[in-house]
Length: 596
Ligand SMILES: Cc1cc2nc3c(=O)[nH]c(=O)nc-3n(C[C@H](O)[C@H](O)[C@H](O)COP(=O)(O)OP(=O)(O)OC[C@H]3O[C@@H](n4cnc5c(N)ncnc54)[C@H](O)[C@@H]3O)c2cc1C
Image (cartoon, rainbow, N blue to C red; front, top):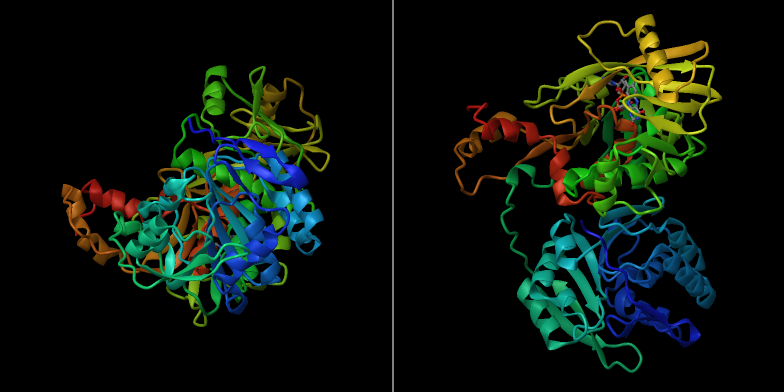
């Protein structure tokens, strides 16, 4: 179980917020904003660096978010990705109250404070990805600083080192932390801090930074500006999953306009990239269903899988609410045995506002019903969709990067035995539930009807048809679930899901020459420990979304888009590896099933 510690707060005069635990103030209500601007914005010389392409900023010590607010005000809408670590996050209520005070004190940053107050989550351990505005994201990493940095994969242009003072919070400034900061910094990237403590200078220097003392703010004589001179990348312990180098330029072709293609197209377009979607019949696959559930998968353990599905649900729910009326936020409940429910609630991953259990039901007030085809229309708005089929042997000549998001039409499988499963949903006229109910089937409201499904059968190819037999199954299951007779059949739809053997999605880069890599890594079959060459990549995939694609597509799209644009992924490294397209091939080699 991994609950986050809450900060021990007191309020001083004139709205000052103190951490009793660290014996320090968060910011000065007198000149806190001016100090932030001096130390972090000017300290990193961001005035001249913002607006020249995407800027990635890392931060230690998110606190009240004041530094991020100052950054957003300076950016004036320019693309920026912020990654900020906080070990003792303010509870949501406290954060919202603080933003209100900040907005009153400094009206010039009030719009940004209002936006942060709107999107700040109930803190949960791990990464929480928030979209601030078009092209601007904030990834909050809640938990111990070293642990959070070690799971991150990005290259920052600038860092705000803003932990409580080294004398009060040495963990934030340790040599190990600074080594991680160096790993996560672009060569020539900068870091700024109010502290000039000898230990901080030493840690920065050992990590590969040069530093200079520059005038500090107010009565502080000095502060530090550091620059990454040299960083010798440590060999990646899992070179087969090494993150790809970003493809910073050129148009991106997206194959498929289902929920996967549409979400990744939107994410790239928001990041300022030129995008073309190819699909002979947009939203004709699984995402063409009239309705689908946005409900969480609930795991008893705390591991990468549980965190991935939690993050996917929380992100999807926020994401779809940001579109225009595509999500019915009716809430939902899931039948669950008491022992399992207790384990889920005890794992520390879920905020109380998201899950509660009573009478054999796990209540999910933020669950809902999505109209996926409508979501796709909105997401693809303003993006060119060419009604063409694309295959591996006929890639668009003008695309610098290709993303395969072709659902069950995916062919670049690289040693994975994918399975296609036929599913059918049915609409009946009554009874119309007022929220989602799930067991081994589901019943949900959709446009004044009862939506129920979904059947699950092997698909061997051929024509996809609705069957009366499956309608009868859906009717019976809905009746069992709701304990009430089901009315007249209104309509039905069948479609095909693409499943992977481990049931997790595929999102990330595809190997450029899988046969060569398989040969280079063949020692894995015998467990040989040696320096294996890192993976090389061509193209990307976002598919294999199985039965949960409506929930997982938005966060996976943000992940793939970040890999292409050099932004910050919403996924921690173990989650990236979980969904890496190469995992099946690596597994096959390790099991001796793939000999060169
Ligand atoms: C019956 C059923 C019920 C479901 N219920 C839920 C639910 O309640 N909640 C949930 O989260 N998920 C649910 N799912 C799963 C979810 O619908 C899918 O995971 C998701 O829609 C897959 O999206 P996709 O974009 O990967 O694929 P698709 O939606 O299948 O889209 C693929 C697109 O690619 C195009 N394409 C294919 N090949 C090519 C090519 N060579 N060139 C160009 N274009 C190509 C196709 O025309 C299609 O438009 C359900 C699935 C089914 C079948």
